[in-house]
Image (cartoon, rainbow, N blue to C red; front, side, top):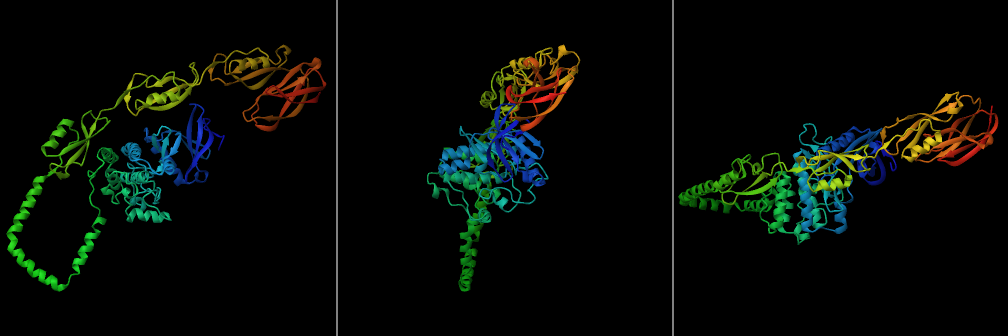
Length: 617
């Protein structure tokens, strides 16, 4: 594939890496003049319908997830049996390589990376896409330390009724997948958060929580074992961060974080309150093992002691019946008074929602996000309406809209694509389609943008760019001798194209240009070819057919064959750029007003390549 150009646009120049389903190459986008990554489906899977579906699913998922922390899809192509995706090129390393190189990361850096991934997952989950293969190998760290997740090859559209598992197979990477993946069950958002919990564990400790000799052994540990405490491996990690990881990695998905926003909220709080104890976790069934063992030992007490205890307890029951009833009544009333039901707050103005929570003794915790809803209104709450909390200590997370995050589009005209991307990065906007067009603007600079500078659009939306490919106006070379016409075309930045001949009986017009395509005055890209129609006089009755060897370089070359007539005058017999590459032959008919043996010469790019003699009859 190295050296191949896909879609007449993407020239492959290096191998980046290989995976089970595809191979990723570094390539140059010849139109946009930028470096891209091209993911090509392996040839052995080009006829496999399952892998074709997975490849299409990755394209669909990538197209729906344009986000600063997700590797963006730029193009989709198919050439023969080659299926490929063109992706944003990220110069840097995978997070796995960073961990292997450094052993483990600081808590601050690990949390920063996790928050970037959660930001990307929040975006994907809101688009009804579950990644299902979150792992450090699929997280790219660029030269600035920014994080981008990639590889939606086994992603699942959660709003699709048809996509659940891939033919019932367990998909994902065994060291990072969730217990439900280990069971071969459908995977939802909580599965992505479990996998991120594993990645966070690895960043903090320098090792994965579960390992084994086989994939099955690792999968069983995800189902049955608890990981070694982070604090036992990395004592500098705070209790709060350890508790967040523990909740993300709960075996029971109902005990994990319900959303990426919730996990991000607790991680940010963990940096402010490292002592922890704010992460709410229900005890897992496995934590009752010791209590159950004690109960079994008590059941082993001798029958005689149990009989004695029965008579003693009977007496005590009668003696304290009134006290027991009174205490039970107090407990019930106390619980009714101290527990409150959470009201429905979605859609309310922030101040009104806070007031309602205050009236029932609950404290609000705020998360602010950009949304289409009116700024200052509640768009979500956790826990939901109808749940119960303790009066005085209960907290309700309110997600508050900050409005549309409207941004004024900056002026990008006159910038390169890279400069335009940098200019947009500060506003939260993205580069959209980049189109190369003929323009008098200097080559590779933006000459038009959509939307125009000064318009207001939502953050995260795209600005399409029209890039100048330069412009040359085709000159008039008609009436000129062929060699002179070719020189004139090259002088203005154009290339002589195919030469075709028109027979004539007028010797004065011999070897003159009669027509050209593109026509005079048309604007074309620099380097474009201009095909020429040349007159060849018919009153040259003597001729000879010859076959001459040539050797054409990969980039092509102009071939010229001349005939040396009497007086040493060289007359062009053939001028063209053959389609062949490498060693080959071309057929040429020599014609002249004179007969007999004559010399001919073969030039390649105006350098003498060979010569010989022929007899014209």
